[in-house]
Every structure is written in C-alpha cells, then in structure tokens.
Length: 124
Image (cartoon, rainbow, N blue to C red):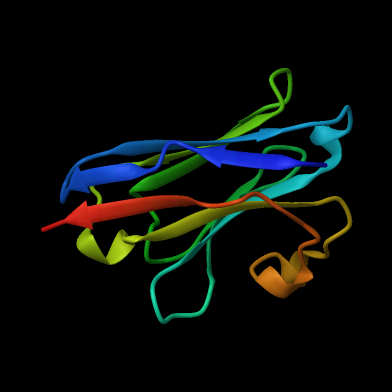
C-alpha cells in the first residue's frame, strides 16, 4: 500500500488541524492505520491508531484532543487535532500494516508502509 499524508500547516495554540492519509490499493480495509510524529531532535513517537474494525488507541499526550477515524470507502484515515499545543509541533506520519501484533502497535519500527510526512507547527 502507498500512503500520502496531507493537511499540515501553521496554527496558533488552541487551534485545530485535520490531517488526511490517502492510501492506494484495494486492501486498505485490511490494514491497521497509525499516526506517528517526530519533533526535531526527538525520536518518532506514537500518536494514535485505528484497527481494521475501527478500534482506536491514543497516546496519553493527545487523548481527549485528537481523534483518529477511517473511511474504507475512500481509502482514507483522518487525524482530527483540536486544542493544539506548541509541543504538538512535529512532522506527522501515517503508517500502515496488515500483520502487526497488538503489543507492537506503538512501535514505529514494526510498520512496513509509510507516508511522506506532513509538518504541523503550533505557535504559542
């Protein structure tokens, strides 16, 4: 599967952004879809994930502010980000894997398919 992320930009603290990840291929519905982010000088970190069945999990740092969703008819996964903070500034990546085990869903090293990343900058 090929992934293309979009929707990043510059926003003030407290604002919102909506990231999209468009996937190619007919088997999108079989993939777990996950968002990661990487701030300058930091390791890539888990943000949110959604299973094939629509079950979601979030990093504690974004819980209650971010929402991940998927539309299998459009081969798209969305990350709605509200109440943004300066510490949310990062390049956001979408990732996909059809076979990842539950205990590894937050480990970016386990994902085989990646989008190119989209930059989110939150000003204070």
